[in-house]
Length: 452
Image 1: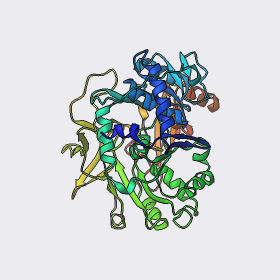
Image 2 (image 1 turned 30 degrees about the vertical axis):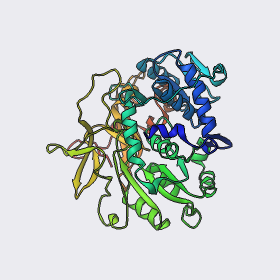
Image 3 (image 1 turned 60 degrees about the vertical axis):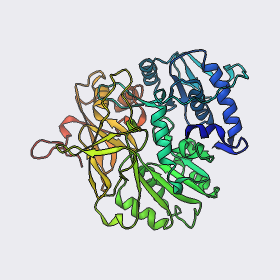
Image 4 (image 1 turned 45 degrees about the vertical axis):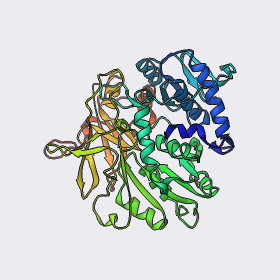
């Protein structure tokens, strides 16, 4: 099985790097065994707090070995949101994967609290067992838990590993480990005996450091969102001459603008540019396609060849619907859904290729994250003295969300205080960049909100 490969690699091969921290497969497996022995003493999901430390990966493998569900919570999340997630999934403790902590009275433990154990576990594949739970924005104002089973994860690994062009010596990570795009990172690396390169926040936002990391490799694949790729392309040094080690890019999480793809192929003419599609409910991605110069002649880029999951379009609304072994069976604490998942994405299938062109609801994709605007509105209107709010995404010329703007009634006297209160409930990417009085809400002649 593909997941078993993780535990069968060369113990001396470097498995995970983050800055100067390096873990071999042997070290990764040994620490995962020790944590698994500790985890077996209790039940329920394991909430893991951290950013890009290799012990985030240790905790994932320990959960696979011990039969516990892995619930990653990035260190950027506010304490109150983590409290809410902990209650929703029934986690009894939080594991600090790195030194940073949240200022909250949450039952927790660190690596140094784990007693040594020489007990050893074998990975036993159970298709129905929950492998991980990831939380996304919810329309009720509460984060929504998406449960992914070992069977879902196995099917994704089987799919992604059939593309040898993506299987490079090093897999360069961009997404937070609590974001489902990261599943592609560690599956491609660990199931293939490669090295997963985890970027710190400093590396991620200082392009010089990030580019230096690429230049130190001999052969690597970058996994990222189109938004991050556009950021890299702002630097003219991001090109094949300066970075010959970059052989492939795996893109997912949001729509890829045609001008971004065109510039990327111009800068890296020998690059394998892979554009993928899939919501979190379908284990990162269910289909993808290599983008070539031929695709650039079209108005819209395809997001995949129809392969791993049955994909069809509803006649009434042009909605993309998914079926298959990668598709989840239901949200946390809700009844299991039918075998067909209605994604809410609008699309079409032409000549065996899937095209996606927007949403049918209030959800958007911003910086790769799926955000329900209703959840933001819920938290803004819950603040004292705010009676009504409208959250409007503003788009750039490529059709990507550039920023979020909030229109308020009545308008508060101090926006900084409002931001501070929102930061207690929402991650930073869900907090609007601009705030205006409701009277300035841009409307079309037929009283609809101007979205661009």
